[in-house]
Amino acid sequence: MLLDVPPLQLPNPPFRLQPDMVRARIRPRVKERFLTSDVQAEIDWAGLMRRVRDHQDKAAFALLFRHFAPRVKGFLMRSGSDAGVAEECAQDVMATLWQKAHLFDPSRASVATWVFTIARNRRIDVARRARRPEPEELPWGPEAEPDQAEVLEAAEETRRLANALADLPEKQRALILRAYYGDLSHSEIATETGLPLGTIKSRIRLALERLRMQMS
Amino acid sequence: MTIRHHLSDPLLMAYAAGNLPEAFSLLAATHISLCDECRARLGAFEAVGGAVLQDAPVPLSDGCLDAVLARLGAPEGPAPRRPSDLPAPLADYIGTGLAAVKWSSLGMGVRQSILATGPGAQARLLYIPAGQAVPDHGHRGMELTLVLQGAFRDSTDRFGLGDIEIATEELNHTPVAEAGADCICLAATDAPLRFNALMPRLLQPFFRI
Image (cartoon, rainbow over all chains, first blue to last red; front, top):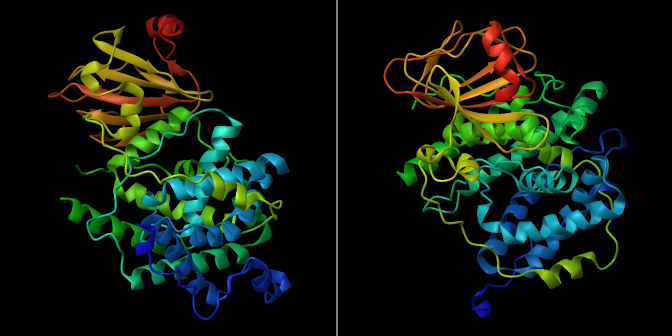
């Protein structure tokens, strides 16, 4: 069955998202800022996820691992884990990405967002040993593949959001980071984020409406 | 179902960040299972998490990738849906349906069933017969109430199936179940309620409410 798999096509031009290469081109003041080419890269992450899901493609998984595992480790360390635990959890998170690839829907989340949700859940498992009830899973519709324009739009939003986060006044940005590192309770979280969340919400809403129509 | 009362932004963001007490998470997950508007808003807050995740990569030790590659098995397929008349997250706590809940009486026909959740907040199911009132009470912390069946009213508004009432310290209320179907709610509190009449207050320790 593995023989049926078409060869892995690396993004063209040659795969450009090695973190070091990206970092070298980023202005020091705004190191989180995405480059325009990252929109293309984000689409490619989704494509690699599809290869993991449909073909259990370990080469695609390795590329995702090299990009995301260090980010998960960094995220967990900032959330209070020591380096050893963070590294172990990063491995677990990437193994879960493989295991649950069927749940990833690029019309509703970028790969980074999806990885974040897995890392968050792992952090809860490890730190508190309490459960985090999850909303009912929604399957992909019968037309499993969202069209490319939609994935492009989602990638564009991911970039805009990262830019907006980088551009926030330092105090406000630090508060949002603390909230996501798990340092702020719901009563300490400020309602106004200053981030462009409306467009993202609207797009996900449309994707959900379409999914509901396919399901009915 | 027309849901008119939703989760607040701070609650959704805390849920996205993974920092709500389990009882509140249960209520949020149950509401989101019924409400695509809040599911989409949650998606936006999780996207912020995706941006935060990109912020600070730390290199892994050698051999990490190989270790993970070696343990990858066959991916899971979609989980089979369990037969239940309840949203999946709630069914995980109380089984197949509301008919199976073991209730204990709070008096006046009002019944409760406490759910086992982690520290920080407590979750319970409340059963209020049609037309019946829950004793007038205030809140020391936050009380979230999600309607699973029927509807109730208080001084602020009407709450129907899928609606959430978010009550804070400022609110004193006497929720009354509407005539018609008995009202069943999932409620979560992060501090004991404050009953305004003597009798319920005396009984409070026994009911853990």
